[in-house]
Length: 191
Image (cartoon, rainbow, N blue to C red):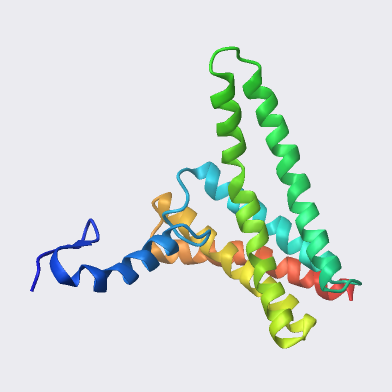
């Protein structure tokens, strides 16, 4: 059997083709918003939490009286407006300095991407479920459930990165998920 370098994800010899799909899957999972490897800093994690709350609130409000098209429009516009406002403030601050202005502006725009990614992730589930099942209420509550799960995961990861024990991190995760519960409660009140 050919030697394998598991850390690099490289297999020598004829088994190399067989190892490619798991490596591809692993790389794809590392790039998703749910991956613990996705966040390079506390700022990225905070942006993901912020985006999840914005997206979930948009789903809750948009679903109160709208169809799928109106929910999608509400969430996309809401996430875009929050992203643009925050990025504008950071870009303006970065543009004040003369040297290296372009690089700082581009970096400021990239730093806001976790808001968009996390804000739209529950919406993707909502659209897929609504189109597959034709049951918009099921899709809405599933998307809000995903947002709640994401918030719990973000809280857990943040606590572990801060040095909390596993039990403490579970507590932080539950507290963070409670924010998703508040959004679901808001949705229930709107109907």
